Image (cartoon, rainbow, N blue to C red; front, side, top):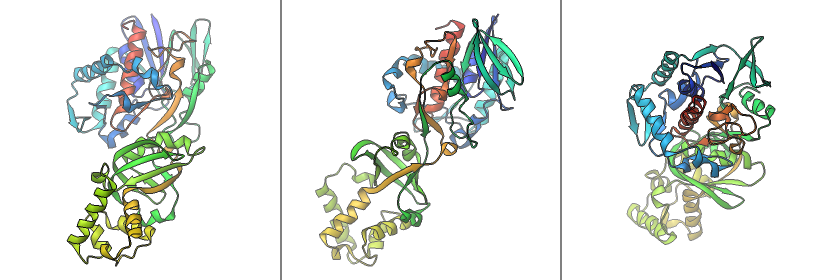
Length: 409
């Protein structure tokens, strides 16, 4: 009987085990936690956003994005949905985001563990793997002062994201480097950004729907639309998270800047249109103070920050402003500038960017240099946007490797 070791009983590891195990293949899942799929319980604010109906590859990222189409295919995407349907998961779909109809992440966790055990996957929980190496044609797994030999090895250890202690979550990268695979720089993704300016403390807690654009050394990188939250250290929110993978590494080497438009409905309009729109509002509201003039557009704390930054008196009226003051005010409303000075650390990140390079593995995610060695999930140099994409890649990569081990590819 062929023996397969999977290090990591998270989403990718468990689904890999489910699809690898059969009558002549024994699968053992190792995890230092005493509960399988523990991290899954926190996803989607405890509701488990496990998929997204929009599976365009633009939502997946890698330092080698040209290799993604050979891994993330329409076929494997359909198979993931078919698999969850076979488990009896009824989706509740909101704006393309898939949640279990129960609205509880524990539903997905429990169904996956039950299915894995039903198929014969062996769970070795509370077992921390401290070393792996090759001995002849076998992989040796060292854990709890024991050694065990396996024919195939799957690294499903996850990433550095969300770990509180230094060094936690790095074992998969270290194992990969030990076997001679290339690992790209790992940095936080889906994480809040730190920005310069003590003035943000005055707006801390404000939430607003915006278009946020990221610039590197003055060059446009990408924009996102959605809700942001101002904090005393910078900015957070889904659109910030989606931009963070580009900024969390590069801010050390480049000038990374955000420009925030607090009025998305004006984002594609010309300067003439915008000026005319505000002028008509000024005529309509007459002698309203600037606070009242802006309060129907912006949260109070935010408009006070903007007036302070533009040095415009809150008692002024639109008609009393000079043309230079109007231009300055509109600039801050439509392109509020924030210089990125850093990001929250790995413990605050939902996922990481970077990892085992895709060029080190084939389309079945098997190491090119080491046959029967596989990598799945977050340990790979693939990360996705908010909205179920990172779990989506966990399911897809785990299924790909499981079927490859079983010979179904």
